[in-house]
Length: 158
Image 1 (tube, helix red, strand yellow):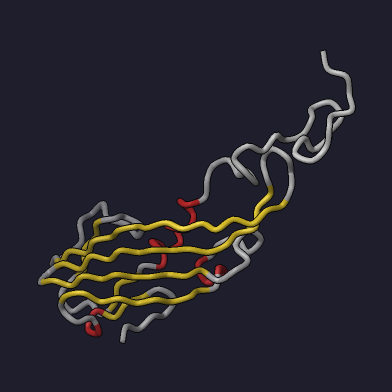
Image 2: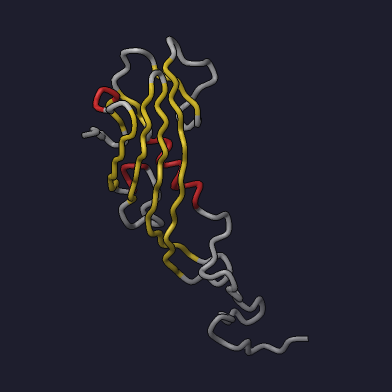
């Protein structure tokens, strides 16, 4: 069994070869906006432990609640993504390494790998820059404000 404290993996609990773990985490534990992320975040980890190297494939998914950038309507959308991070055993980390990098070091004798930042980043990177309730959202009329997805525009055009 792996041990999670937020998103920390105890290295000594990993067996050599393939390991799999599933966990659900509250959005606020990952410091995600609870107005957008109202449901639990499902995290699946496929961990490959080999001599001096631990590769972690992180799959995340949740349903979010958003406001459409075109029409202003609230809508729900499932978001999911995969992210890969590789830990290499080294005597000391490289100077430019930081949490969230996809290649990092771990030292001999280190007990845990903290992937909290990786899980949070995977969730945030799945969100599109432009939130649309549907791909063909017609938006609002710039003159009368009618939601063109449901109503005809009442102002004169041309």
